[in-house]
Image 1 (cartoon, rainbow, N blue to C red):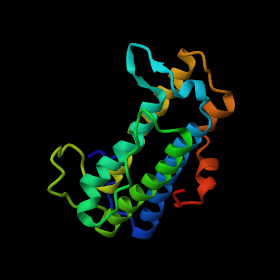
Image 2: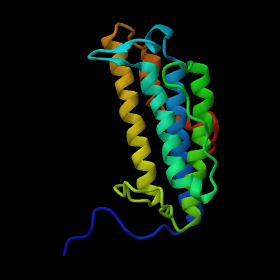
Image 3: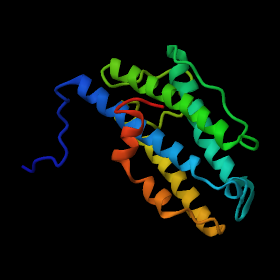
Length: 189
């Protein structure tokens, strides 16, 4: 009989799992904020080739607004406050960074809530999609993947549109030890 590659044994300490989940989320949030802080103004309003209604701004705003939608669906029925969405066509970098700090905290609250419930976010009547497992590991992975996808889009668009980001920025989004420390382990800005 083959041994499984990935252990399915539960963690021995829920506080260690909670700390790891919240620190990973904080690092992801800090990575997103770092990228937005370093986008040139000319890129912010640049249209996406082939999609003239989309800009780098609308992609970045979508990340915050998607967080808010999921918090409204999964967290609000459990008492987690939903941050306001931003106007994806008018939001400034500074406004979006402030909003992402709010939605980052709200997402941390949602993950923390799930950790308090044996690692599961209880489904709500608003959760009709039913295609995302609601254990905190899958919820975290979903959001990190979603936001990583859009970070990649933004970096690629910067190159395509002639606003190539400096190596310190492109490489900086992969400096997770540094980004983790920028807010303190588990502390969402």
